[in-house]
Amino acid sequence: MKVKRAAKYGFCSGVRIADLKVKRFAATGGRGAILGQVVHNERVVEEMEKLGVRTVDEITAVEEPTIVFSAHGVPPSFHSEAKSRGLNVLDTTCKFVYDIHRESKDALAAGCHLVFIGDPNHREVIGYTRDLDPSVYHILLKVSDVEKVDWTQYERVKVFYQTTLNADEFEDVVRRIEQLTKVVQRADTICYATKENQDAARVLAHDPEVDLIVVIGGKKSANTKHLWEICREMKPAYLVQGADDLDPQWFGSANVVGVTAGSSTPDYVIDEVEARISAL
Ligand code: SF4
Image 1: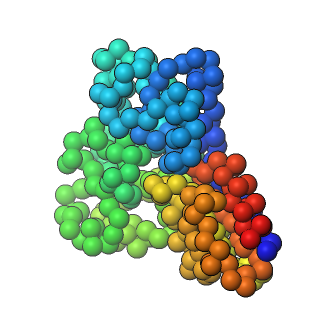
Image 2: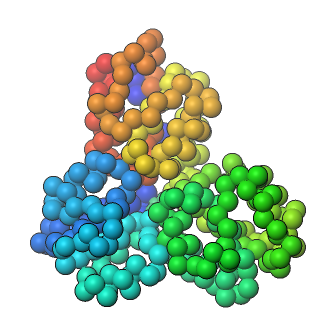
């Protein structure tokens, strides 16, 4: 069986930098705890734990001198809370996430009502909204959510997308807001790394040579799930965290297996999956 990788897959620049920062910190004897997964991948979390940097869910659970904020970013108040607890901060927030923090703050100051297209439970979206008064923003995902809002009360609206979303899938949501509101601006916040991985996954899924696709990534990784959704529209597609999740029954008479991976999947996991498929 031949393996064909997507032209673009795996770690994005933000995750690569976060991963490096934490490893460098651990290698120089740093003792810290990461708030939430540093990136959404269980193998990376295990690797960090082996290096002595464990993962915690609350700031109150940090016993080490340093708290690590992940690539997804945190609400600004977390920085002051960490400081008030006497913790050092190792901030690995991606620069693109910081761009949204900055742009949404400016939009608010300019009198816009904020709309975040995204998952209200995703840490990136929580980072943008947790500190805000609930009256100044909405988090929306569906047209039916848009219909529930009285848009006449807002003069200007600015729309932001969670970086890892596929904007095309939410065009109907944003169009509906535009129909109901006087002035709507869209911020260009879809991360290019996510888009490049998605475009390459689409090309792979349309490749007539490819019989099925294996998508590799963490259980909690939103962008990996999106890649899988794109692939399965065209071909049988399976989502795995690593080589151990592969089921030989999936491959039947397949000759060419497409492989892609979410932006939080380390290179070595992709290599392991490819080796296991080739050996089948
Ligand atoms: S997917 Fe994009 S926004 Fe998210 S961490 Fe990676 S580079 Fe940053």
